[in-house]
Image 1 (tube, one colour):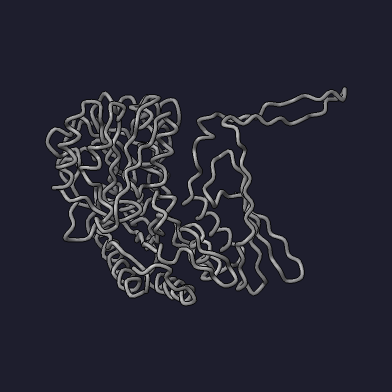
Image 2 (tube, rainbow, N blue to C red):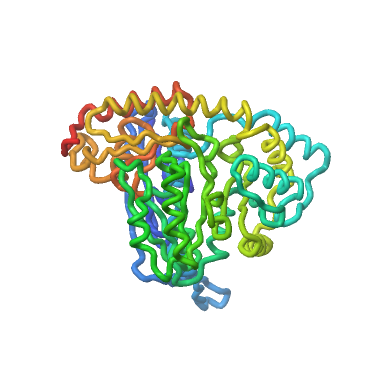
Length: 480
């Protein structure tokens, strides 16, 4: 995202080339944000979007040669790339960061990143690796030391057994998921994704030339997948079911009994595999408990379990994740990785070993963070629950609150315009409250907005007061 700053007569202007509205790669979007030097008169009303209509874009640029002949250069992009939407969470996070760097006092609650530092013992392991010269390539699938530690963790904490050759360590769980989708999906296959979903799942399916099949869930069901709906949508083209528990963006946790019902349905379909995204497993609030899908009867053979170190261990910048599954599938993921990024950082892998050595579920270091997340969750649930026109499903894990603000849609906001959907309400909050949130349409549910409470309680208290103040002039258009 390009940011330009110009000062003239006490007014600053920030220009953004980010895809705030989440348009396709074929689209061009520019957002102009103007504010006075006092930084209190923020405006986000100038949004210009133009879309290319053709599926494959062919753009020509002219270059003059010394002989004045014009040469036409084909700068078209792959249809596969053009079919993929940019990540709205990344775009909004970058957008808010640029505003903050320009001096706007924005409270940023868009990113899914813990505000804690990496625990000292983990950081020291990475530092020592550098000091001791452990800075060279590792085996493509990861060091034997780390993969052995992962196998031990999965056996002790999750009740699932793997050998080291059934593990591939990657540069973050995001890479692990993409490689899994690429490894098992063919053109025409369907990837079943419950909504609300993490923004990247559908786009990863498209990158594999597969079709995402979105199954909506309901807030009064705690955004959990209805097994009957799942069964009705499975077809001969169904190849992969994606489950995320605890969930991003809702914080919902799948109870074991519900997972068992889903497993019974999956077992009827020999082509259907399950990708179980368990990156938030340790950030869970009692009495909720985590169940690994692969631990259920008959599911080990068809489950690809993805996990990592970013969330629970506050290691987002270390870029370290992994996949575990039957050797046939994991070897395919390893092959893709060997021809793309190769192995993960050697220093990060040493840090990963230290993280898994902290004890069951990360030990005291992680439980301290989880306690803080729970305190923040409780504050936000209570505070937003007292506001008019708001629906909340109390999250049982992760660090997100997915709030239904749809009763405010259709209202004309003075000095802003009409609140039409989750995206315009997020712009309203950024404009009037200077709080950056993520619209629910990025996650497949336009009625809600995601708030990340991976921020200090003091910050969250300030953000809530700003949002509350911005809502004072608004009245629900529809009774809740």
